Amino acid sequence: MNYFLRKNVNRLMLFATFICAILAMIPLVLIFSDLLIRGGGALNFDFFTQLPKPVGETGGGMANAIAGTLMLILTASAMGVPVGVMGGIYLAEFGKGRFSSWVRFSADVLSGTPSIVIGIFAYTLFVLPMKGFSGVSGSFALAIIMIPIILRTTEEMMRLVPVSLREGALALGIHRWKMLTFVVLKTAASGIITAIMLAVARIAGETAPLLFTTLGNQYWNFSPLEPTAALPLQIYTFSISPYEDWQRQALAGAFVLIVIIFLLNALSRLIFHENKN
Amino acid sequence: MKIKIEKLNAWFGKNQALKNVSLAIPVNTVLAVIGPSGCGKSTLVRCLNRMHETIGSAKWEGKIVLDEESIADFDPVTLRRRVGMIFQRPNPFPTMSILENVTAGLRLNGMRNKKELESIAEISLKKAALWEEVKEKLHQPGVSLSGGQQQRLCIARALAVDPEVLLMDEPCSSLDPISTTHIEELIHELREHYTIVIVTHNMQQAARVSDDTAFLYMGDLVEHGATKKLFTNPKEKRTEEYITGRFG
Image (tube, rainbow over all chains, first blue to last red; front, top):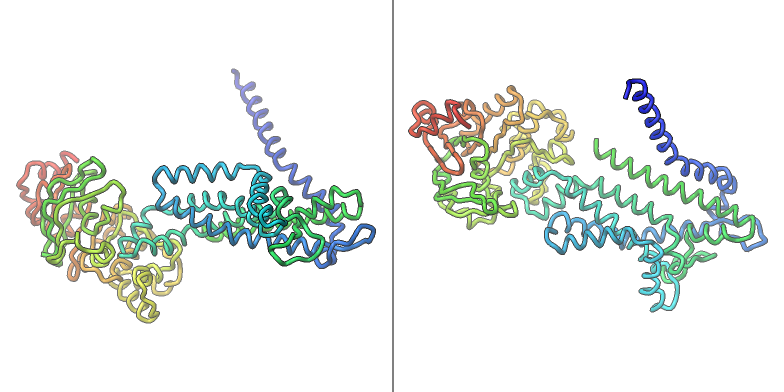
């Protein structure tokens, strides 16, 4: 191949990779700008303070759905974070045999399981025996989605802590559990917190597992045993409705949700970099 | 004798790293352990504080006696408070400040009294010849120090738990010549109060800092004796060949 041909092929390929990199970014840019223009316009103070209005009345908001989503995330984290973190510690520090490789394998499969399947699982386990939809069954489904993410990342982060630090601590006459808690876990903490934030960002937008667990609610509800409103559910219900006012509200809700997820991602990056330096 | 080793055998899985090693270390002396890579130097010192057995497949047999008491009867945690260790690469805890690093061993074993902790930290940092360099910045991260300072910080951290024996596993191998000199001078001072075992690749260093030297080759203790004698008039042919640089 002569020099000029080679140089031009190089230019062409470089251009192709550049275009693909741009393509990867375009969907987010389009979604975000569209939501900003159409949904942002429908945003007002009422959106964060009012209940949804019935069809025909204008105005209203999604205050109950925002509160519901926060409540679901908190209860799901209360269930999922301890299981994920402690399980990850076990895998990193004590898990050497076949059992551990099975746990790892199941976690990897679980994180690839469609969330609607997890929703059906929670439905069978909670909603059917309790004879009713409830927030807690939705939180349970969301916790199942969180666990494999947190479990595997905790394990990875603990493994990244060098052997020299563990030995340094043991050689000082420090008990193993203290070494794990105050040296290894503390060193891995920023990575684990990042994983938790990303898991929260992931479940914040989940809709499918909530469809037949949490169900949704047009009114305030703070009992975990009652159907609860959630942002993704409200967006779903409103956006497929034929009413223009509801559709505008759905866009505003989607905008709020994406901003929340954006902030969670940004925060997790900040925590990770802060601790690295 | 501070430490007596009798017929020590050590393995990694099926690989025998030490074969029938017997030697004794008098109180407040420095023993240098020399030998080519893979000869079992590190394994020998790691047996003395029972760090060897923390590796999955590792085991050891034989008798190691600290002050008339077999270390096999010790709780390893208690033993390690009496037998401190400095590693090849400085390993300060990255999440802790200089002060927290020095007092880590004490704090994690339950000491809470802030005044007492600070005074022990000062004494330990002075013993490690680091106090003058860090007294203004005790609350900065331990990893912000230079490599040589970090290694002295690790020495201070080991001294803070008040050990009787110090094991040093090639403590200067990752340091520049000036930092190496600092550590060697430090060993000279520490020998008055501590029994020290130092593993080194550097024969000049062994000759400079130690009272006795042990030469290990392929897991065997080839020769052990007064450093001066071993370096000027070795009994064994293999020792002579090694110290004159003909192999290893």
